[in-house]
Image (tube, rainbow, N blue to C red; front, side, top):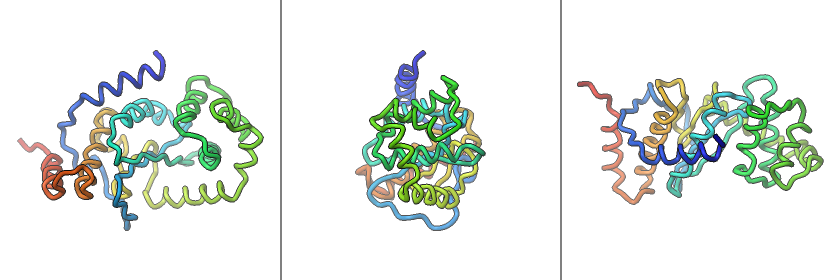
Length: 232
């Protein structure tokens, strides 16, 4: 079954699935230590991921299908994670493509496919540049040259700072509004359930900011009640 067909089926499933189970702070999601940067005009969701990560590859179709169901005030970003040896190359490639103006939606799935489905050997920046060149307007030569620029180096340094600030220690990890951290190991039995927790936090943050057009105090109270565990 093709990746796009899988994504279409998952989008229909996720759009129709009601997330009725409670989500509990400290169990299903965790508050990030330290002050967060205020975000007032949107709800920001960051996926900390790594292209070589098998779990990230498995999660990607769910994540892409889920993105198609989101309201306009939700901004989804990616944060590449060089936790293991060899992963820094893929973070470097991610930011190089970003600096060059490559649309992530054009290449994101292609990089996953090259690694996990096609089993292409990617041992150098040139190997990785070929994948981006095949799926965008950049050339291998321009990609390699851009990777050595100050702009990309600055992005890599900010990446390390963000990973420390958010407390990312595994992939995939989801950060909501710079305040909340969610990992698949936090009591979840499926990716659908994990996405339900993200939806819950999005709704709570949107209500506090008044982004959904409803009464924020009432919505926050309702969200808190929904998150209470069933004690019966």
